[in-house]
Image (tube, rainbow, N blue to C red; front, side, top):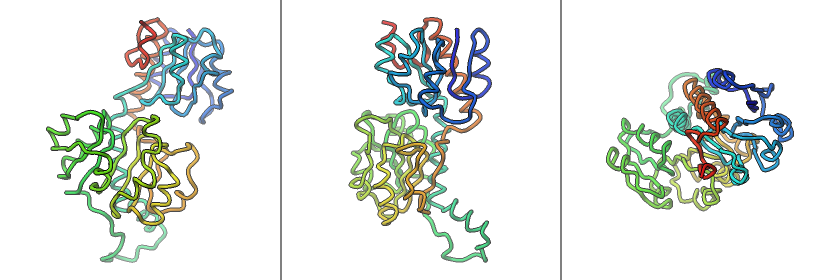
Length: 321
């Protein structure tokens, strides 16, 4: 079988694919254009792609012998799953491989924003530090505060559980009751408006859907506390960036930490100009362990799909019915 990989991924994944298949890896360290993906997928049986790749109907229809699409990500809103399903092409993702890494990044962002880590580092490197001062870099404490978790799925749950050492009150929003959080942390399931009003830290862990697009806009931001912090490691469009920039500039909230953006890789100029927001380059899963596990999982999904078997992490199992 022949496989097109849209970006170099950790070697253990590529080694699995090479054993019995011919693979072609996009040679440049950048997001390929749509035309480059179409060119790459022609003559191939498998497509291993990234969340940054838009795999639409044109791409899927470009090769009549395409048998499998493996996404190197948990999310899959970059893929036209409906078209793939119509063509009986299995689509897979990599759930679980980046759970802890993403949860850890959310916590890293909380500390970075609350304690002015980035601002203080720049301040110190610039030679502005002239000695300890009682009002220097005052930030927000973490312990004994209220943590709001929007989306209590796999990552949201892992994120919340890591709060235990800080003796926090946990509020969460989800379609389902999370018994693990309620038993282990005494977490309380509430409506979004209540969570926003009561939480000192609000962390977003929801998939991108029609319902979650711009879930956090101007009205929601105005519900938050003046000293609250918003964290987004889920999907960029979940937050209305223009509204967030306005909220940060006008000090409606204390700060924000972002790993994802509404129009990636473009980032709002307004956000870039603010020093009460920490901006990460969509790197929440960027640990050696996580990215390697993702590569192996994506490769195993690909190999199963090419054999006509149901991939371990198939998101459209109906193609096998």
